[in-house]
Length: 528
Image (cartoon, rainbow, N blue to C red; front, side, top):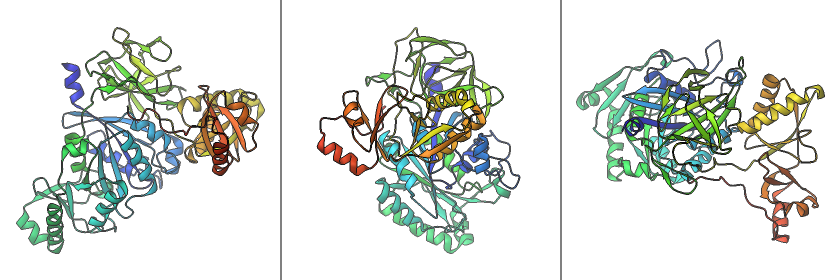
């Protein structure tokens, strides 16, 4: 029963958002409320202020954005909270997609002045495909923004998901007084703290006093609450778990307004880990032998050690450091002697972990994204593959100094295995001039930065004419190679991608050559 009771204490979720909506700030404030930080500083590494705990890469700290996803664990209200902080830049989304495969829910952060933005829609579609329950936090309510009801209508219209307010702001955006909890009618008034460096003092005010002291702001809030009740916009936990509604909260991560209420909702509403489906559609019981899958590989988090960490989501059983597990893809034994929990760049040796936890396996040189690991004394298991997404940008890569080609080749292979970029090769040329394919342009910047700074291989990228990719096969390759405006390259796993110079040419090839295999690169394994 230890495994089941420990799993029941886990809450594993990701925070997703459009750039600059305040995701990394909210991440840091969750850590503050969970006692994992003594004081919160600015998330942006500017004006001599320190960077966020979750932003560990030097490039992130220089740019003031999150580029890589980070696993963070902290205790709160008797639960072990596993928070996966994801990239927030609009051009860097593939890593986010992979991280969502390891979560049981997500918190969507929206800027109250901007509402739904393009990246929000893309991330929401992934959550919908994975059937992830979604909490929504309207952030920056302490600044001028849009009308409250207008924002709720936009969420329902664009996402097709009713937004059900759990807390309701008193005061309009820019004049934030506090929130009313619609579940019990209580009013919590907040007091500002300098730069939000400490947990914001909360004062429970009875309705009569609130009506007297808040005046028109209170009357307006009461009218709006009455309207919400009339239309039946009430919290339904079952609808939330079925991804049929999104419980909504209002606040300001920067000043800590409403952060505590949101974190409480994570504990109360986000489901604990459930039995995971394997590749055959069978559920692996939580109390079966240890099993898990790798959703992220990251090298050189500690540059002085040049290490490589595989992040594994524990799906069943009890993980114990030093146990020998089976590496599903190779069938070989794997020693977990070097296992750690991660707190940004910092790490601490982990002795045990349970379903829902994220464990970093250090020096996992042969482990790749999507691999399954399991206890050899129990039934083998293979979990569905991590989603793979169609690249939208293609650049040819060349090392500037041919004397550094060995370092370049090693770095390209490393970035490919981590999924920083997709590396496409022509079998005739190998690594002489691979094509880097990405979902967003920032992936190229990260790749060249790491090639130069971690592998000593300064690299130049040159544009290609390719605009769209399709998966093809060995039988179709010769005919495609004979066509103008088309090339066929291969991934490291041997799969073939046909690259086209325009979507119009692709359409013509498809219509004139229906016998050729040209499959869309859609996410695989989403239903897992």
